[in-house]
Length: 473
Image 1 (cartoon, rainbow, N blue to C red):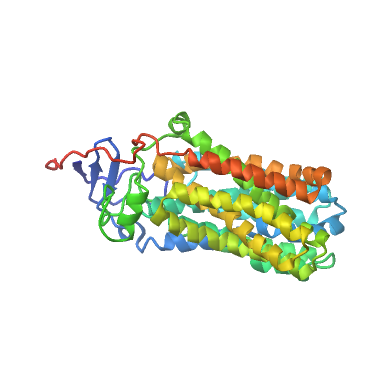
Image 2: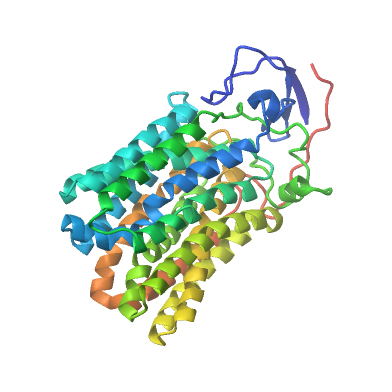
């Protein structure tokens, strides 16, 4: 490898990390031309440990989790209060998912161009989230409710989600799986209190007050976290970790051995041309569609079977908690076992769990239903951080906001067939037919995931030889 020493900081990828002072650093260039910027610690850039860039995004993700994972528990009351049909409420959520996922790529592109800083994205997102809940609370017309909660709230939560997920990958390039999974998990289990509020303390007499307070809660939490958000400079790598290491003890060395860094920094167009990013997109479309289907219909299915409200609420609560905890667990596991095999395992669990839900419903077993809600929740969330970590593993960190934005945009398609179109399948085929279809398509996603590989690296997984260090100039 070649060591190039410079003293300028350079542009930090549209971030707030840049300041007027210059700090010394060195750039390590490997045989393929990839540059690693080392020498600056996280404390040099932030003034404190980079661990804060895990905990703050985690708190913000917990705040916005109420949008998606608790919405299904509020649908009956919303329908009664506003005079909406079940189809109306499903399409409101579907539009929210469309815009929450759809804004990810343009937001990432603006961040990388310096048009939108991470902090500003969070500020704007928090305000839009408040407007979304105010619309859901006070607007009876379903079209304007879709515009308010689905479009405005979806854009706001999407800005927050994409900023938080990409923040972690930038600050932990050597061990991103566990950290990304931890942050991503907050997007699921953060909704748990609201699931039980919507099931037990939410009715047509207090729904406006409850929704208004939730909107204010999201605004405050996200706004406060945003004050501390900063991105690292481009190509930044922790000085104490060898980016080319494949052996040795320690968490970072083990993770890099199983998940070597991308061979170079791919722009979005270059990532698309590899053919791997489109495959990731298709696999996420299918997996997210199955996950959204479960989130949207599990409570209603439990009630139709004849299970009481406690089981219905508990099944959704179990799904949300395991969905979130599972993200952290598989993120850590992927650092140890490798990202791709972990992803394949997770998608298989998701697919098989759908058939288990059918079985539990057929035999009218509450405990079996909760078991498969557990497995469905695990599989239905764990693939998100794996795709989030796999994207910079394959295409590098510099354009990760845009590249993962493209992969994650698959969720906007998933929202259509997982929620709105899912309701049509339920009407036509019943719950058994819909769950069987979900399980079958999930297995197809697992097969697609098996074909993924890191672009530019030999299929055997061997690394190209690295030039010996030369004297610094």
